[in-house]
Structures are given as structure tokens and as C-alpha cells.
Image (tube, rainbow, N blue to C red):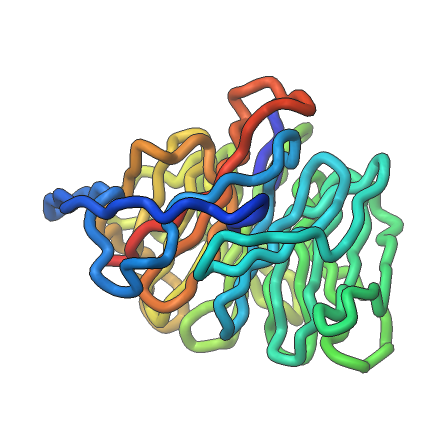
Length: 321
């Protein structure tokens, strides 16, 4: 999910009125760094830059199998749905004072799992009816940041406490569980620690990024035991926020660095080897990312810009290559 100016620590991309389609130019690349403002040769009519409503303060994004993105607001917890083909968007879950929507994940059955940031809540939205089907309120105070779907449950990070939360997927109602983080996990005494969350390529464990210290951890979901993932070719992933894994490739969004760092993982995610980095002049503190086809979609949280009701926001997409 992202970090607030001092979010997740958590949180795609579209909304507002119909977005204009932007002309596509040729990109440049080196072996180490790819400038993602380059050409997109697939679906050339789809917009790659999307305006969001003023004051929206985007944090999280999720995309399912279809061409629709869901984006959460750090300002009030509202959720918008946007058509990636046109940029047209609308609100599907209204916000409220004190609410927040940071990490988002969309399941195959249309249920959207929403982490609630400073509100400390976990909500489940049925995107077919746009109604909440469940709300959970963990007793541990903190910042519920990001979420991943793993097994028959959804898993959430708490950026201010060494604990994971997990709730059932689908219609199961066995309730909220807490899994304390242990082993080599390093919890900051104050502020943000755990942020983005993913699964390992072999499907046996979780990956969590610790933003301030810039480390990736492999976590056993049964015990919460965390072990440090060895980075090769990179000293750290400071400001690591959203995580996206495609096969054995892990994309780490480093928000305030305006950077996506790309790593090759072994099956168990014991090591992460730097492949390249992705930059783009349109990045303005991107937080979370979501994939559709050969592109990543990211929201610009603009944490270095003081938020006001008139502050402008947008989302962008970049090639995976």
C-alpha cells in the first residue's frame, strides 16, 4: 500500500471525466534503467495518463481481468471505478469523514478488499452491487495499509504494529485473525514499517516491504516468522510501497524516489536480484501499482505537495518492459 507525509505507507488509476488520449512517443532505455514514457505499441488508443478529481488523494489501485480499475482515496475512503479504455470514472463507494482507502485487491468473484489506513478498518465491497458485504475493525491500533489475496483469505499489513490481519475470502464468515510478525522482522518505534505485500513465486509465503529501512522480508503466513530477503545488485528499497509480482519478477514502487525497481526472485523469494529500474517524468510520488496485460498502472499520491480540496491528482501507466 504508501506513506503519508509525516501513507501506505498503501495505495490505479483513473477517474474524472473522459481522459484525453495522449500521443505516444518513442522510449529510451539502458541495460539498467528504462524511461517508461516511451512508446506503447499495444492498445495505442488507450490513455496512459488519467486525471482524477481534485482533492481525491489517491493511494491504492486494483485491476481485475477486465479493463476496469478501482482506486481508493486517502482523503475520505471513497472508491472510484474507471474504464481503462477511456478514462471515464465514477464513484462506487462514497467516502466519509475519517475514512481512508489505501490498499485494494479485486478477487475473481467481484469482491474488492479495502484496507482502511488510519481508520484501522477492513472493508469488503461487492463490485457487482456496489454494496459493502463485510466490515472488520481490528483491535490493535495502527495503519491498515496494503492487502494481498493468498489461499482462501485476504492478508493485510499494519504499518504501525508488527502484525498481519487476515479475513476470509468470498462468503466464508470465520472472522478476522491476527498473525504477529516475528523472526528477523524489524519494527520502527514510531511511524511506518510494513507497507506493500505480495506472494512468493512458489506460493508458500508472503513478501512484505519495510519502507523506512528499505528491506524485503519473506513471511510464513502460518507463524508470522519473517526472514530477510537478500538483495543482489541493490543496497536497499527505501520508500518501498506497493508490490506487484509477475511470475518470478517483483516490481517495487519506491514512492518518494519516483522509481519502480525490478527484481528477479528465486522460487522461494530467498534472494532478489536487481534487473533494472523504471522511471518516468510523470511520476509524482506514486504509491501502489496494478497490472493489466503488459502495463503497470500507478496512482500519483503527491505526498510532497500539501493536499487541499483543489489539489490536482492523476494516474499513469508504464510498460512492463
